[in-house]
Image 1 (cartoon, rainbow, N blue to C red):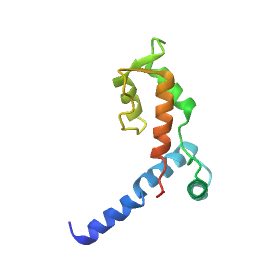
Image 2: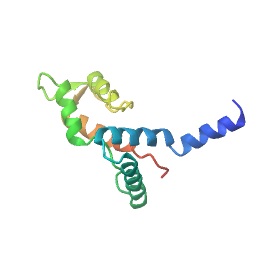
Image 3: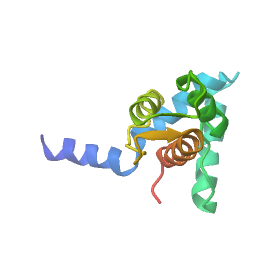
Image 4: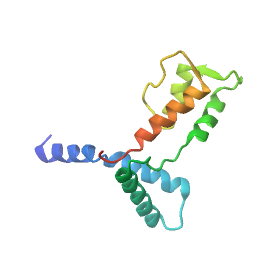
Length: 127
C-alpha cells in the first residue's frame, strides 16, 4: 500500500467516517424524511451538539427496542436467554462485542448492556 492510501485509511478511521455514514443512512432509511439532505444536516447538527455538550448522540434503537428484541428471543417467557442467543440477536443490529459474562442473560441485563453498547457505537465523532 502506498503512503497516500495509508494516509487516507488513517484519516477515515481517525474521523470515524464509515460509522458516521452508516448511521446517517440508517436514520434516513428508517425515517424516510421528505428532504433527506436537510434531515442529514439536522442529524449532523445533533451529533455536533451531543459532542459539544457531552450528551448522548441520536440513535435508531432505544431501550424499548432492545426489550422487544429480547422478547423475540425469549419465546418461552422465562425472563432469561442463553449468552449465545443474546449475542446472536445483538449481532443482527450491529453490536459485535461480547457483552455478557454469565451463560444466562436476563432481560434487564440484556437491555442495559445493549443500550449502553449501542450508544457507544453511535458516538461517531472524535472525543
